[in-house]
Image 1: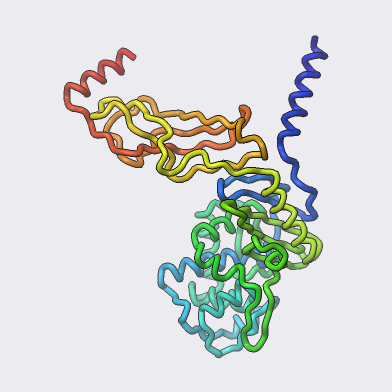
Image 2: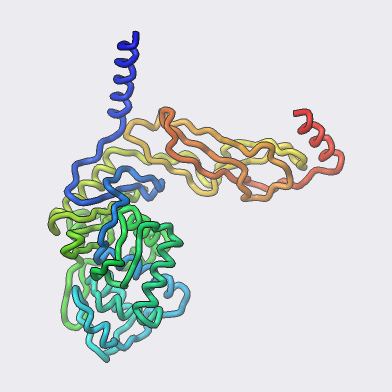
Length: 374
């Protein structure tokens, strides 16, 4: 009997494993791939291992520059006089010249497309007064975004013992940049080349040429970091994001990133469970002018599941109980728990679609008695 039970359990475990898509073998030190449409991570390898981020650092520099542009503390047409420090910054460059004015727009393109370290320093000095103060802002922003395994020491990604990150944190950063600055992302990160100072340099992201659905985001390389690439592709309504760190060559990082993106699109489906205007359920309200309130998700709820698994999804509303009036429109009134074959894949807040005022004195007294008896 014990042997029979063990055999049954082994078969069940094997069946469950078979239903979970297995990620491809990837040449890299660490990696992660996820679906930004649903916010779900699909697979990862050593996502929390500390690594040297190299030029992937420039995503945080860009994030802060875009924030400064949004706040109107700087402007794209504004001219900047290049400092001696920016001009002397080693590594990849857009070939700025000391004392020569350059626009913020040119610096942004030099940073994003040409991966110019000199552009990063010039922008850091413009936004914060110095690269050191800018690095302090980078670390504050990293903390706000939840990048718990990251510390920045400079704006460009040049090697420093106190400059490090993780695949998971870099995923969080890239996702935030795409989410918070969609216009800037669309404008700069798919640009294949940029010419400045009579020198044309190509974007080092080879996937921009190989896959028309890829529209970003950033490459990186140092001897310590290896060849790195954060890539994003949009196919239909879905957008995937991959982070690959410590690969072996430019060609390999592109090939392996493409492999991760293709796997994510081919092995999984994204399903829209509820729209932002849909009512999930009517929830009972106590001491209210109405007996129930319509409840739903705050924004479109999309989940990502293995191909063919949509029919096995189950959603359960865990309503606040008792829900006592007054209830404000938009107030959180419960949680929607989504599970696939008994395994919870996400919990999502449910809010009141409408306001419910308090009942009169008699109604409140009656519901008080009912709650006491309950």
